[in-house]
Length: 68
Image 1 (tube, helix red, strand yellow):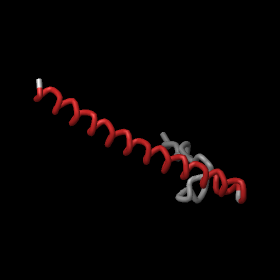
Image 2 (cartoon, helix red, strand yellow):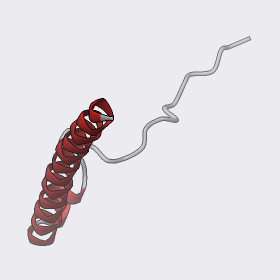
Image 3 (cartoon, rainbow, N blue to C red):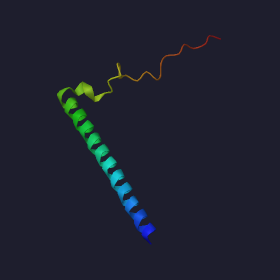
Image 4 (cartoon, rainbow, N blue to C red):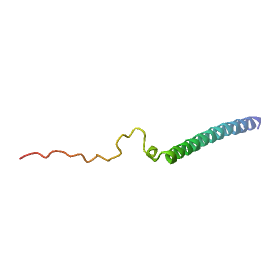
């Protein structure tokens, strides 16, 4: 019985740690979203990924046809 009580306390402690971690992640994610939205409001060009230089889709680039 005493062993079960100890395990229950340990589980409760682990649940508290997990809850704390997820709470921190949630706050961090929320802050990132708010910062992104604020920067997009100031400069709408920031809505696109910073790494994208040309947002035009060139996935269908022209491929020269073979001559027969």
